[in-house]
Image 1 (cartoon, rainbow over the protein chains, first blue to last red):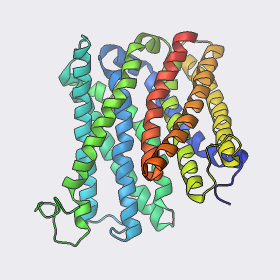
Image 2 (image 1 turned 45 degrees about the vertical axis):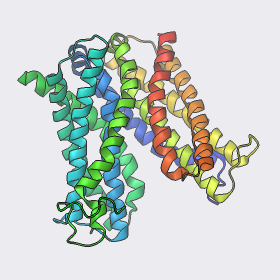
Image 3 (image 1 turned 30 degrees about the vertical axis):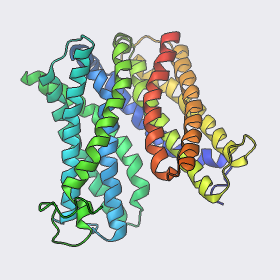
Image 4 (image 1 turned 120 degrees about the vertical axis):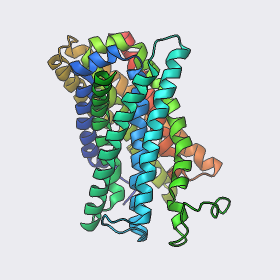
Amino acid sequence: MPGHDTARDVYRQALPVILVSLVAGLFSGTILGSETMRAGISEVPGLLLLLPAFLATRGGVYGSLGARLSTGLHQGLIEPRFRLDRRLTNAILASFINGMTVSVFIAVITFLWLRLFGNEGNLFELVGIMVVAGFLSAVLMISVLIAVIFVGYRRGLDPDNVIGPVVTTLGDVFGIFFLLVGIYVVGAVL
Amino acid sequence: MSSNGSGGEHGGNRDGEYVDEWSIRRIVRTMIPLLAALSVLQLVSGSVLETYEETLVANPALLVLVPVQIGTAGNLASITCSRLTTQLYLGTYELDPSNPDLRANVGAVFALAGTVFGAVGVAAWGIGVALGGSLGLGRVLLVSLVSGMLLAVLVVVASVAAVEVSYRVGLNPDDTTIPVVTNLCDVAGVLILFAVVSVVV
């Protein structure tokens, strides 16, 4: 009966999900611990400062896009295929705007925080890295979410059960990877 | 609801009553303040990371632990919160150490934390060595297990407190507890990790 599981039942049901997110976490941790990334951390002031905010907002922006699309599907407001539907394009555009705005906002508050505590910081460098990383995450997360939700829904999978793990797993792994790409691109330009 | 519903020409009223909920302006306006507040909160854990920059760059095993700790804390918190909320609605929840459902939740969280943070310690040590680190297995395992178990205590306390508070205040715990507790545990995950690091390493 639901709500009456023993500790052992809960453990057995939750372990697989936790282990999947653990593997993803180790994977993003490995990118974070790589020599290139460590060099980036040492060279760009503020990178570690913005990291948790950057990762957390991936979940906020694309988790809510996923939840919205899934509710829309259940209500019959959107159809499980990609066409130029007004609601679908609105939801996608809005999450893109949210993702980019918040990325720039994070770069700015990180810069202000650095300045406030008397550290060095380069606003253009931070904004540049966040714009590149934010843009790449937006493109990847939006395409994967739409694919997973629509294909899953057509195959009888409840998107509500899939979005959470997909967003956290991909968000962290690719978030850190795109951060690395951002450092590289901005380093090449500036 | 109706206060700014008719104002947006660009929101598009032309295909029906639900479109307003799906207007770009509306989604952006609701989300941005929330996301901005969230990022400011996360700067707290960022500033802790920044403080330990040298230790982290010198010991990749600890850098590997960062996303894992944040992620697992959030996962354990969201499982605990949604279970407690369901039990609240089913009428089986009671803030009493002898309540069987509460004991099952707490037992499961500690068992999961022990399993996961043990595995994480070994994995982070291995990856750290592969990435050129020199921190020993014992230390990485100690950091991971001690901070993980402290985190499990926090997850349990915070989830129970959040469910109790939102129930008493009259808010639906399904809407309030998960975002509050997962974000709190994200930040606390980093704080606890580095409190332990500063003692052990």
